[in-house]
Image (cartoon, rainbow, N blue to C red; front, side, top):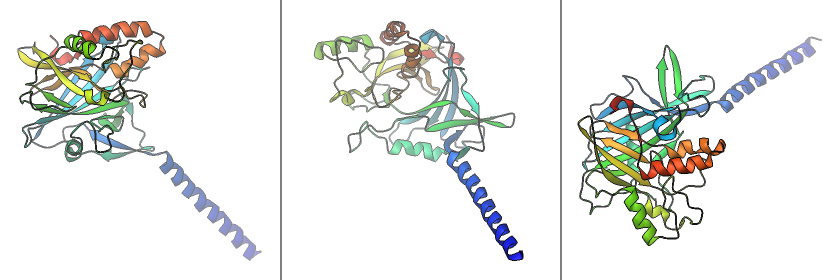
Length: 317
């Protein structure tokens, strides 16, 4: 009996150990490692960067009572005299409008992203295609998240778009690749671009959000060549100069959200970063799921042609 009791106890112990291991495995299986950009007074400590934060109201653009929070992490001029900006946009939840959700520390783990990590993103992303002719990553959607602390609790961005920009001031004869904002570029309005485009490509749609003509098609063989940020002109905002840019970019049908477009129309201000923008790629599905396709077509086309953007409330005219 004593030997059998020992066997039973051993079996119980083995089962108990197995259950404990299974519990750890289940916790690990359901855990998620988050690339975390911590925003607080101690997260980035360097004289070579500036951090700015803005709130953008989407009501004037899309008639939606939603907000976008943006952070500009601005790196000082490098050896090429380029200022570099990591633009982080906190996009609202479609249903609740909330930008933040409380962190579940049992399921979510953090991999802290440092200044060095962010700067390293620029090193590997110097053009618009790599040697395999696939798109380089200058935009990341929900691969990184901003983490903030409030009243002792941690909160994570619900939806986070991270984009890389170089700020240049060179003669237009030197070409600018996708993600480079040349303040000295030749100015070109979207309306002017459309006139030129329809003349040389009468059977194709331009790679612009909001331009829809079902009788035309996209040139999938060449459209990657059209990825570019165009300077539209300058604007005075509270006695400071802002540079208006707009973007042509290829529709990536593999993405449920075509975040390759990013902040498609934008305003850059020296010393302040990107202070205005549009997020057509993100808000377009709201109109489609609500059956407002015609409203979307009219609204987005008008916004595109008129180059409308949402300006930071901190700089409201």
